[in-house]
Length: 154
Image 1 (cartoon, rainbow, N blue to C red):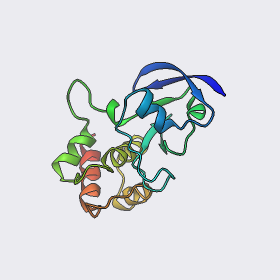
Image 2: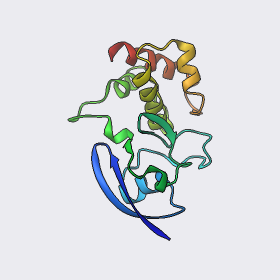
Image 3: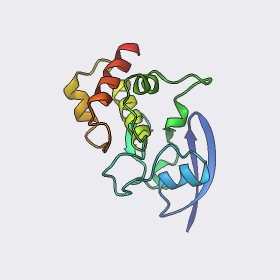
Image 4: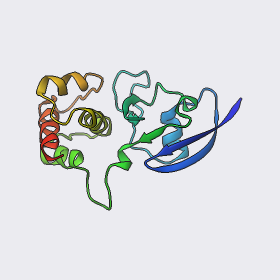
């Protein structure tokens, strides 16, 4: 069965018809061509599909598109403005927190959600907030350094 929903994604309004079992990650990637949220484990373990929904980091593979109706969503594509990287993206680049890059959008979005609610997190708070994001390449040290650096800049 199809339902009409309204989404605000990266400050742009969309009206879409979705199926009852369609996931938010699929709508973002396949309907809106916003491929930054990666389809990794598809069961909410890896965090590569993390987006911000109404100021909260969520695994978009676990959220039905219907649940996002009327919500404000920010994806990695919505961070850079006017061709200029967001301070978190810039910090990830400067600190070498990007290896293969698959987890990077989800990591960046989780850090953004954290810094939106806590402007000066300590290392333990950063680690706790990133617990739902897995990286097989960096060992997390550089990701944590990037998060600390971004917090100072923001």
